Length: 221
Image (cartoon, rainbow, N blue to C red; front, side):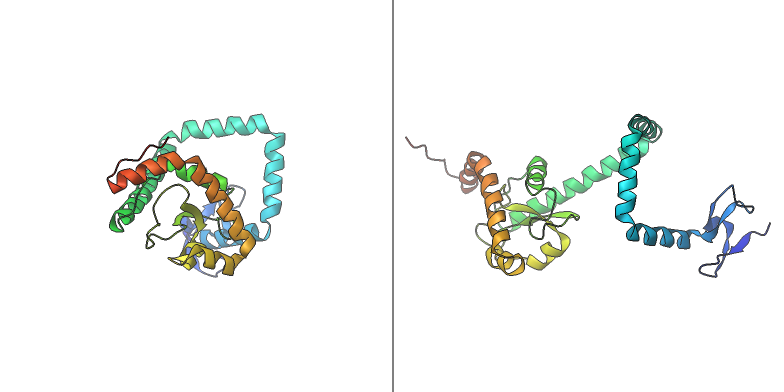
């Protein structure tokens, strides 16, 4: 057999290594090259996303014990790979935290925000962007910008935001920006959630603010 084949989709003559293997094919490889195969798969996936999700959920529900056993086998066979990915994810999280801390120091703002605080506020907003409510990759956004005197990195001022909203808002006033982009109802909903978060961490934040100012918190009563 020749060591090169022509992909019928892109018409390119490529080495056999550029084709996925397939035992049922008489040449031992798939007809389309890897690039074209991926493009066709992604196109099909985007057009049939909900259908695929539904079938996957139905299959897992009807084969739950087999699915769990399969996951367990995969973890056992790929333990090193999984640990490496987890480590890389933790490093990325640490870098994100370091970036927030550095920006807070540069702006002489209080930094009091843990990874658990982040998980909690993401949960408060249902795992969605606080502004547009879309499911997307979430970034940490200062509701009141760091450039503002009240723009501390604390629970109640950090919200999950998609890249689009974070880039659009930048250092604008959240009240005017949110109302203009998403309406007064969404603004009220965000304020209500953040008030709940602030109340939950009130004593912790107040203590830290007094400590940040270098003065002792007064005790009343």
